[in-house]
Image: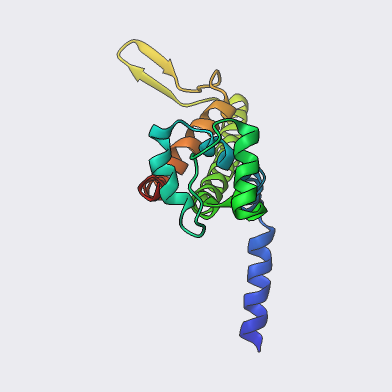
Length: 178
């Protein structure tokens, strides 16, 4: 009983941390974005030229008997065609793979961005107050404060790098499914 209580308290503290909140916020933002925009992506694929449709049909055929791209080549016609053949659910056909890819990607991007930005801002403030690291090479003194570098730019770059390194296998999986 005591162990369960301690575990519960530990989990509550972990989920109250700023970093976990940012990670979860990123995941939810990615999921909501894909859920809302999935019909537009499905319609865009349905309106694609035939050379692009072969790979799309593989993804969208997984749970429906829909052949996307055959028939109407404009947005309104594709929208009506998809709904007539598969109902409203047809607009979200193939969205599961997108969700499995975007949720961790967005979570990692937002969590990494906020963490790096916050850390770099703190370090730069500390360097302003206490002096930055310096290197002397012969008669040349180099100031390594990097105060001119934007924490937002570095955070954005770090977020993109981390999400790509971690989520690249998911992107490969999506491409292979298409």
